[in-house]
Length: 567
Image (tube, rainbow, N blue to C red; front, side, top):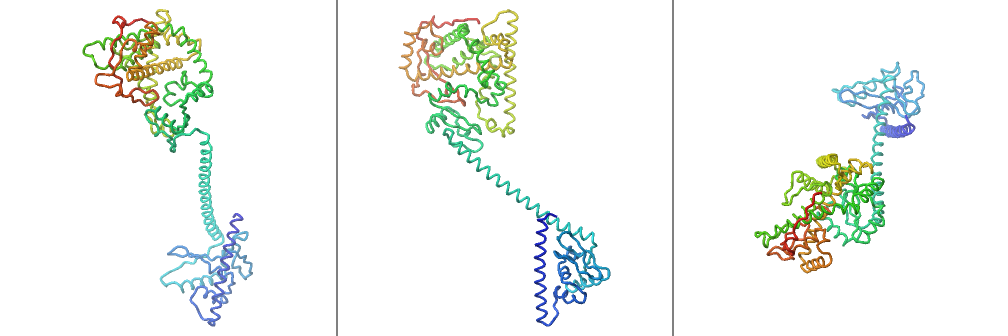
């Protein structure tokens, strides 16, 4: 038994002794006042029998402290606490029960007087209980009594210690949580002062529900409130948005290397094989190598000039298609969907530059491989632009298993289609022995020189496709809408094209559209009624309502012929 337990036990025994002695003294005084009159209490019976049975005061204490256990059969344990019994009787009434001052128990009754004690206890019980109750008086031997009393006390002591330990653990847990919350709140407030201002975020989700589908308008609105640099939280991820030319120059030019890395979402990680491309690669040896490849080989002035006939072919093909449609009698005064022509030329332009393939014919029809390719691009943009909870709250990803499955299927689809096209080019090169200027041929030729893996070749090709397939068409459609809403500006731009550049220097889609046609809203539509709202979740936004306009030729008919080229 530990020293603390012994001390607690000794205190309890001392209190019991004081209480029992006080009770005995009160009963003794009452008996003296009444000249020894009988009383029907257990303590009075013991005091009256004290001399008859030759009991000491300590024995009386022990007999007063028996425990009645069970209901039907009562086992009586006669015990004493805290007193060292060293009285020498003819036969020892008590023997040492527990060591070290922890208590003394009446373990074994002496042989000669056992029957007297049993008779006394039985008499007392029969006196104070109805006759129909029977009681068994069990006098324990030394071994069983020691085991019983020690187990009784230690079980109570163990339960108490276990309770105290649980209480201490609970208090420690509560204190730890409070301390952690306080420290976290303090650090957050301290960090908050160092971050740019921004909208108040919610726990866990941050500002996810505050971001509107047209994100650039949402960021522009926050910039009006919080300034040109703001903090936006998507889940637990911090995004710092800059909205002024000065800050953009500082971020993109002066601190280019420190801010060169771009956060990769789950979809981007899957589609680029964890940054094995150019656009999403971390700044390092791989990024430097691929950027050198693109600057010196793929986008060099020599290669861009060599691919110029492809761009001219597609733009003049668009002009010819527009001329044929707008001169049809049934289309007189009707608006043409400008986006259809812009998407066709952008799609053909990038696929011919990258793969040497034209998927859309002059009539606007797309072949089967072109349909698959276009669906692949559309799905990729849709998956990459979504603001998913699983994307920004990692511990919720187990709730969205279909998203991960969709990323895996799309990545496999992209790889399979690209490998098919690459195999076609490899077979054509082996057959003819001629190396063309398309990007895929250039990458396959330079693969060994720059130590490029097949994964990197595929990832770089898709960087070019995603960068060029939509952005050009979107920008030209918005520019055309502004020019149609402002006829005076349109006329001034056409005059500058006529007098300064001329037809021979025009290569862009917008330049050809303005040089070859007058543009006006459809009949019955005023310029200010053109819908200029956006309808695309993401950073690249199409017009919500596709632009429709009436095109009128400005030049002689022979200037609308396509400059076809086979490359």
